[in-house]
Amino acid sequence: MKYVEALSVLAKLRTDEIVITSAGNSGQAWWAATRDTEATFYLDASMSLSTMFASGLALAQPELKIWAFMGDGAFCMNPGMLMVEQQMNLPNLTHILLSNRAYGATSNAALPNVVNNDYGAIARGMGLTRVFTFDKLDTLSRDFSAACQHNVAGHTFIVLEVEPFSAADQKLEQPPIEAPELKFRFGRYVESRTGCDIFGYRL
Image (cartoon, rainbow, N blue to C red; front, side):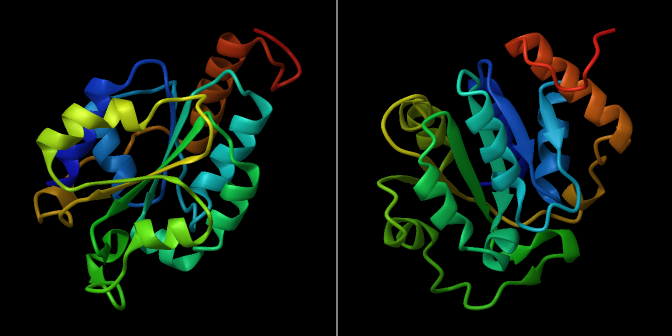
């Protein structure tokens, strides 16, 4: 699957999910597909921690449905995150691993051991049972929503096998929102959805 096309499919299937992107290509591709300025947190320089950020939010606000994107370059930096995710076992969080077999943020430098890496098997080895892999757009369109049912038993881990960014993809716009504005846009949105108090005052 082409990376941007796969995320465009997810954008069409999205209902009210909050999205956390990882550093690198996922933020660019999701911005290209959605132009979302409120219900997505574009977590720059996340260094393998996008799903941990999302886990904290999912734990604090169990009524929210959250998708957390992560590239396999980030995943390889910290596969132990799955130990935490399995122990928390949050039913409202879906970890979506974008496996392009490259470090997308560094001009597609190859990951080590790419031929043998089986991310679904790693997840199962950590005890996760809701593990799904998609490598074709038609099956992603047809079956993703059923795989991604929220508030069913068990944390959900989904692998999307995608192609590395092309030269044209590398030129996609980065989300044009500076960190302070992003913080307030996203935080205010979460406040409006949940009634929680993030900033200590309301405008």
